Figure 1 (cartoon, rainbow, N blue to C red):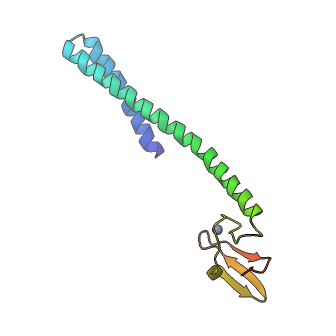
Figure 2 (spheres, rainbow, N blue to C red):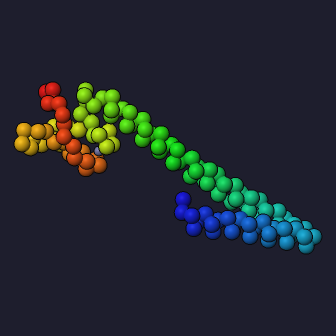
Figure 3 (cartoon, helix red, strand yellow):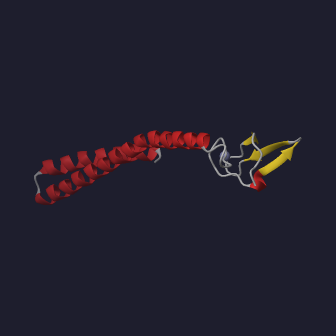
Length: 122
Ligand SMILES: [Zn+2]
């Protein structure tokens, strides 16, 4: 979610709360109904923004956890399976090149180039 959009939503929500308060303070029945609706809408928007912010705040932790798991996996299976050392994507034989007797692999997903130390088992 864009920070600017969030800012606008917060200002909009606060504005609705203030307007709702003004409408309530007039004492007329129609205005009180309108004011109550505005307060509800204002609270709704602010709650929505609050929840979005919580989700946004939780995201980096999730991403880094997934990243760590992937790194561990590629370390463990390095000798058994052909996997990219940067992102863990599977490497197929068409991604391999033989250069001066060494085998170089190019990841089709992230473009990382690295040398395969073991000869392929097929
Ligand atoms: Zn990769």
